[in-house]
Length: 57
Image 1 (tube, rainbow, N blue to C red):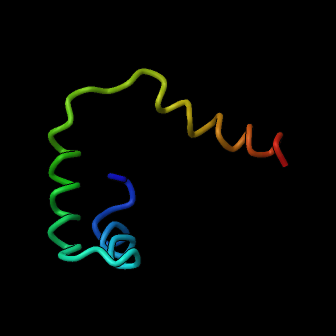
Image 2: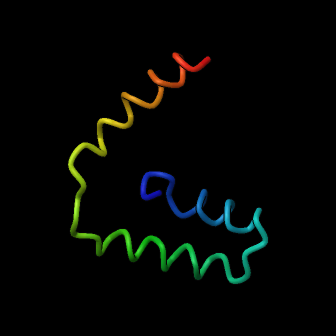
Image 3: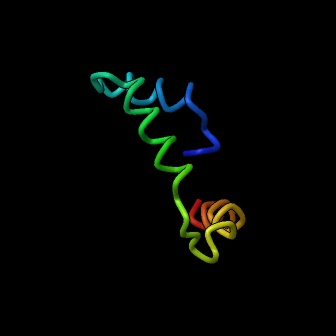
């Protein structure tokens, strides 16, 4: 979500009818900035998901 940026988060929340979506987007991004735990292996999903998707197709 952090890579999506404020604009995409705003658009997604607005699309789904969220009220005060700009405030929610700010809250989400602030929470992501405060995150201190990194789960080992999460970067590997960028490589694995497309590979598994091709296999399923």
